[in-house]
Length: 164
Image (cartoon, rainbow, N blue to C red; front, side, top):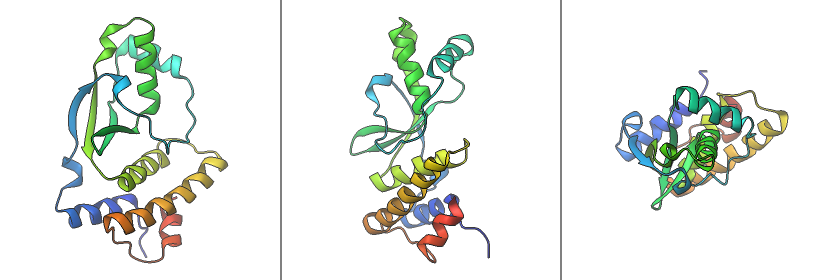
């Protein structure tokens, strides 16, 4: 049996909502203070000063990704980048008062799933982070199923294990 992954979840969600997930992101320029860090972000936030310094040297290479939930912009991917931009503002670099972001409208459960899966593959997780991720992933999938009508094929524990 093929491994079930986050792309399968997003494909299912796209088909049920009638949208193409890859093309939903829109560009927006915002002040870093206007976006909210996700309450669900439990990943380590290290080396912010070094990241801010690199932005000053070569610019920000990747925009922070946001989910717009009920009119509010929440960080999906790029908590460290956003903190680095805020640090540069606090250092007096006014050019960081408007920063490029990518966003799309989403529900709270899909914001949670996007955050969890976006961080699952871009860093080495500690044992504690893996445990938290598995727990929160299960909760987010159940919530997306209940609130958004996300169709989850198979057993939830098998899907969570496959996504980890």
